[in-house]
Amino acid sequence: MRGARAPQLGRGLTGYNGPMGRDWIDEGLRQAPAREQQRQLASERRRRQAATIADKAPELMRRLVAEVGAALNEYRQKALVRADDIEFEPLPHEGFSITKTSHPSVYLECRPSYVGQVVYCNFGRTDRDEGEIRESAFNLHFTVSDSDMVALRHEGRIFQNASDPAEFLLKRVLFPSSDHPL
Image 1 (spheres, rainbow, N blue to C red):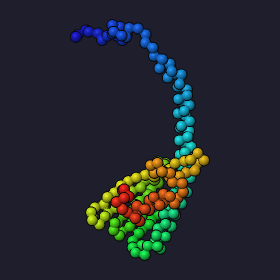
Image 2: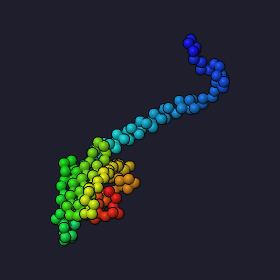
Image 3: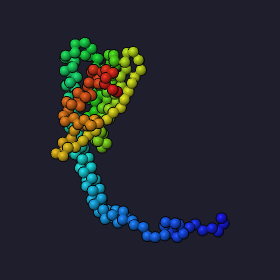
Image 4: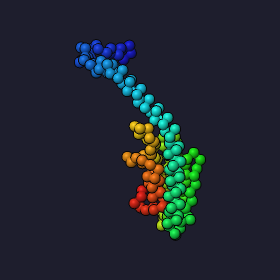
């Protein structure tokens, strides 16, 4: 093998001697300006959405915190038993936490990240029978409509106002059951 040369491309290899049609290269080069324009439009759309979320999402979160607080107050008035075992705490930067101490004990904490365009939620439940905490983390994502309205989204569901995500979150806390996945 000493002194042996590697075969040169296009010489001596069967099937590679003649010119091959590589129309895909020409087609790709022709489409390059359109792809660059699409990339720039998508980048501008993401920048605009990020700016809209940074501007409008804090107000949406303030409304959500207020709605969660109001719904908990209504629950306390209507639920005569164990209504005082729920603690609600607004957190800095439009977040909140809820702790329910009666069994099944539950906690929920939600904190927004406007840069990340998400609300991080941590949920935990301790059932009387099991004694161990089962926890899960999930996210609500900020989304922007064509009319520049900011909303929250969980998986495929878009919450159009502050009461919808409040209901979604509070059902897990106030009425925990095996039907509600962590």
